[in-house]
Image 1 (cartoon, rainbow, N blue to C red):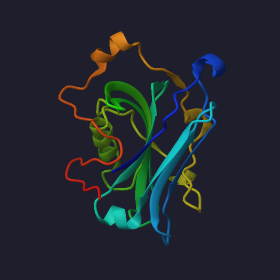
Image 2: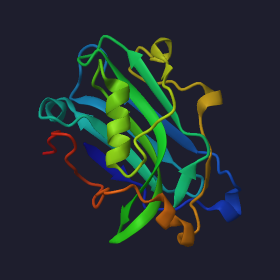
Image 3: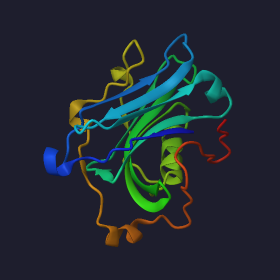
Image 4: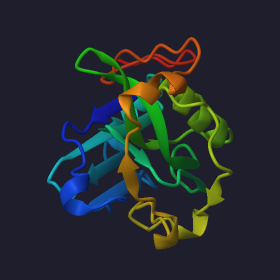
Length: 199
């Protein structure tokens, strides 16, 4: 799995709580792929942003998803989406979820994650597994089928009513209560999960 991390934290004082997103995008390969399989990007009102993508070659080598993580924030309402398409994986999944991880050597940092995967027919199970591997609880909301919302260019179009806002991370004193038992989420650049190979 390939991950990208947004280095800037949300500015809740200036932009409010929950903080709306400036923009986000998710794309999946449909038809003939030009080298990439899926990608995500995310930007905040204070100018911070990040993106991550998987190549077709990487997918064949075992890389199954791309994730952008916002430190020191949580989604107000997590969502999960799945779809079917005519791309090389025949579908995919997308999720907004919360997790606990490590940033600059500090373990226990809350993150708001934007994750895309392509691996039917068990897309939702893979989303939940990756959620758990990234420090979430491994349980996502029931997925919403958005097969009819996938654009001809592979754009993953999320209904506006299902776009979550962000709220601040828990106070440090409460973070310990959120640690997943036995979790190991030490790095965000590359990781192995359930036999997936990152190269």
